[in-house]
Figure 1 (spheres, rainbow, N blue to C red):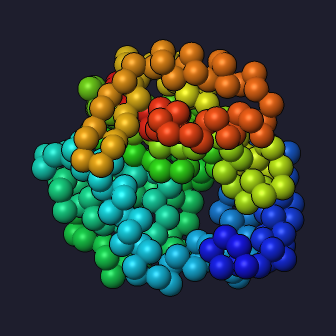
Figure 2 (cartoon, rainbow, N blue to C red):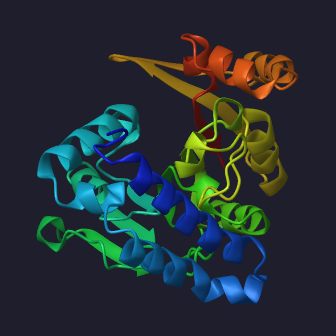
Length: 276
């Protein structure tokens, strides 16, 4: 038994099915993808009944731990008068918790099927998206946040979604983007079999690649946010960029090993904060 109490056979089954479905996304047109994200994810969960996300929904303890971890990362940015947006909200458990500390919460996702409706507060609003769109008013959001989302987007859609996030942010608003670093990946189910993500992590980024996207859409400043226990620090980009240049030249097994050593893993764990 390995990885979340699943057998190797179950993980192989998950891998083959996810790789098949991800292939359809990778070769699809922008028009086809408008409805394809939700269709293929629903098919994945229908065919892989032992998928960890399905298991997590049935575990209140796991949900509590997951939300507590994210809140420790973002709590310092929340204000009573702020409008908060979570992109890729999933079961909306985090958005529901954030709602206790802000004026208004918008939760965006491609399906509302996974929402834990018993947790939804009054200052919460769910918004359906096609995977790229952010259907909110321009300059209406103070804090946007995504966790483990960017890597799930088709590379052609990533810039479009980032542009849409930028548009809805108010002047001086921030986007907190938390996503795994390609140099210590892959991080989807293909990590057991491949050196490059082949599943629903359609593209895993480096800090260099992602910060370049942030600059392209117009963010005035981009910083790295790291947290060690209760201590928070904000770093400029260049130390991580220099590390990535060196690491990217190493063979995959050695690169992954070096990138996973603390404090390298702390520096390369992508939590970028872009300021409009």
